[in-house]
Image (tube, rainbow, N blue to C red):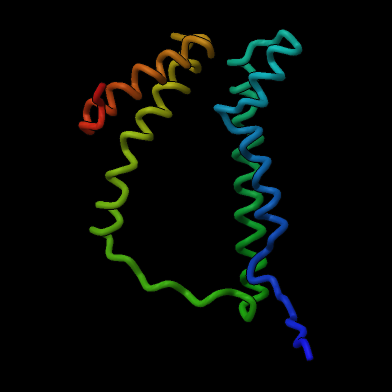
Length: 139
């Protein structure tokens, strides 16, 4: 005899699936580049136009999750143990070079210093600098 397992979602899966669309709006987005080339529109302007709707969707998704979790406490997973602040700061320190890389690429486009194609070269140069800094740059 096969025992039938009743499946129950632990979190709003629709929000998880819907948040995949944020990658299409928030720069750097390959879809916006392809779209910009197809309609012969400025890719930098499309990137600027995608920021506000992307951030708005982020806040709407976060708000939905907050309200859903307030009204469905029995379906929420147990809380994880708290991490000390010094451990959080130590863990975040390793992300700073990546934030520098992303900021350099997107910032060069927004500042008008580089076109999206030139920003790819900026990304390569910054990646080489970061790998040299980390000691992982070799032949």
